[in-house]
Length: 110
Length: 211
Image (cartoon, rainbow over all chains, first blue to last red; front, top):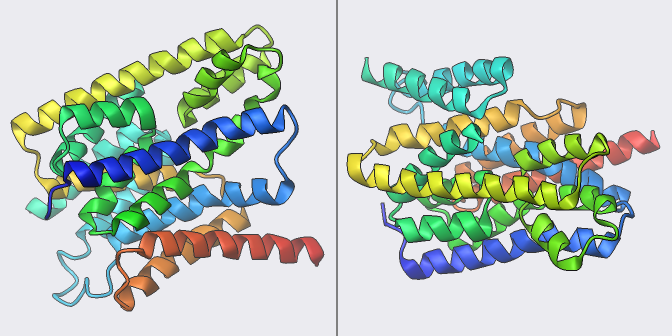
């Protein structure tokens, strides 16, 4: 893996910081208490489930993942189910991360 | 507050694993200040995503802050511009929840809410920097650190409100990511998948509204 250089870091950092600041500040000053247009509000509401699902899918799924057999390729999927259950039960990022790392370490080491 | 420390340290460890130093983690935490965003940058970098795709995806996820910003607009009526700006710039998912609850009691002010935000931000920044130093010192195996990140995304996903529209958005996003990888577009897969998911959910809710 290539490490991130200062110049790449600065490009990503500055662009992300600017869009973030705009998203946080602009609506407050522009709307002055009015609501966002309904369509936009709806679309914004759909972004988190879609984006987090895409991130999870990107980490867990790969078209070639079972080419070398089902195990150990299924270990991350089994760990993910464990995390999902813990997350539903505790609603805690911290417990989910601990459960995920523990399950993943156990399954890949044995 | 403890939550920020507990998530900030692993976040710092990941930032270290892609070659960022303590100063860079500090800058990210102070000026960008986003838990999901700061996990996404190392995640997509490890996945080999092109820079433009990383920026677009992180910014897309950050647009949810517009909802928070709009929600606080009434509370900031008659408050000094500079304070409103500082308050708005330091809102996050967690402090949004805390402050909405406090504002609803009626005995809460923007300057106190800003204090909550800044206190959260300091603990986040500090724990990120500590994470980088810890990661530097002990060298956590990358596969395991990366799975901590995946676990956090899973938790964020399953704790969404499960309306039919949201479920469709998630499902289409997953299929979209997989399809992109099938045709070899693994770099922008996250961005394309997420946008497809949002479009599908919008189309669905529009069709439902008409029918």
